[in-house]
Amino acid sequence: MFSILLNNPQMADGKALFHADHGNLATKSGINTASIDAARVLMGKQKDGTAFLNIRPKFLLCDIADEGAAKVALESGFEVGAAEKSNTVPNSVRNIASVISDGRLSGHNGWYLNADPVAQDTIEVLYLDGQQAPVLEQQNGWSTDGVEFKVRLDAAAKAWDAKGMVKTPKN
Image (tube, rainbow, N blue to C red):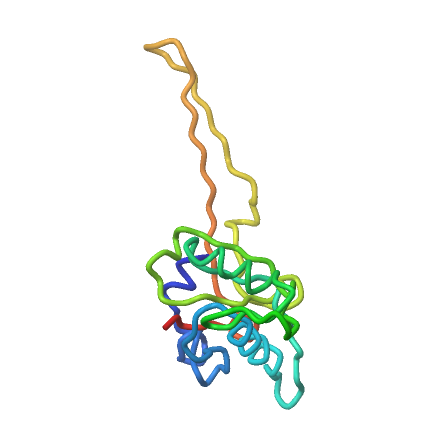
């Protein structure tokens, strides 16, 4: 899944997953109340034809180094700005998403809001022949006492729709 975010693959329309024409590429910003709200608005304004989809974020994905800033921005009672926190303005994005941070996003210049994949197509993991559990094979040793095991899981990830994901490049 992370390789899809990092590689920004081409979609069926010939444009990258995160592209201005898809309406899912926000203005460069760090993680704060205003930037999360801007990404939320982009997601909420996605359309299917002329109908607004009103998609809501469920996850904020970021580099593990940004996890603290993401949690502060999403969990604070008051607005978190780019340089400071307010003690008077309520935080409009409080608890709108859960933070998922991962080292595989380290050094990557951006963070993401993703919709609930159950409600909106985003990235799907596909399994060969629908086999979602690992295949375990074993073989008894002939020349040595023991058993050899082989474990295999045939899976791939694919981005299905750009509407349920928003990327915000970092400054």
